[in-house]
Image 1 (cartoon, rainbow, N blue to C red):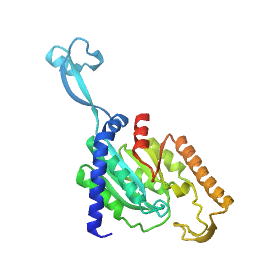
Image 2 (image 1 turned 120 degrees about the vertical axis):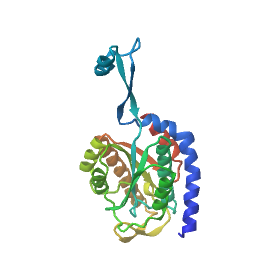
Image 3 (image 1 turned 45 degrees about the vertical axis):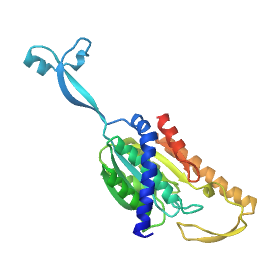
Amino acid sequence: MNSSELLKKVRKIEIKTKGLSRNIFAGQYHSSFKGRGMSFSEVREYQYGDDIRSIDWNVTARFGHPYIKIFEEERELTVVLLIDISNSGMFGSDEIKRQYLAEVAAVLAFSAIHNDDKIGVIFFTDKVEKFIPPKKGRKHILLIIRELLACEPKNTKTDVGQALIFLNSAIKKRATVFMMSDFISPDFSKPLKVTSYKHDLIGLLVYDKYEEQMPKVGLINAFDPETGEERWINTNNKKQREKFENWWKNHQTNLTQTLAKANVSLVKIRTDMDYVKPLVHFFKSR
């Protein structure tokens, strides 16, 4: 993809997702993710009905009549997108999966900056491929979209645990973290528990329809994108299709259980379907 084509794709995604995040997601996002707590703002004279527990006794003693402390919510959050760019993570029935991921990431990112939050991203395979530290602003989001569309990973496999370990090291303060992956990875339950204790963690299972159901198209030369292995599969064979579909069902069941044990929510998004509905449903459920 040359720079002109990349720029056009980035601009197209910005136009689509910026409107969505402003008109649909911004309010839901704001109510779903709270700030870090309450911070001191100012003092004012005590008024009838004020909570006496808020009285500032030092200021009261200085002026001879009661003053109370005023607190306000610390709204600013740090949002981190943990995005799987491994070969299986990019698998799809056509070449839309990376653009689809970019759109979902952009919607979340624009929702964050509408609330004056910082947004950062970690691209990973079985290693951390790229880390863009959290910042604010439109230019920063466009950088994230551009990097996601253009990034060429050095590795092919997936290891969610390695990405979580890096996150815990790189992001010191509590953050809201969206993990976007197919989660076909070695066991990551231990770092998941550590991360969910430190951060507000949400899993986004982004998958293609052909990962869920093998198409009936005869004899095909199947290629494992992570191992590089090839083998012939007769997709007309009912047992072969059932074996494949049962594996995927078991994978989703195991993933749901693993995340639930760590108190991590899971949002399932299929690339041939609209991502708006599952995201809005998730925000409302919080």
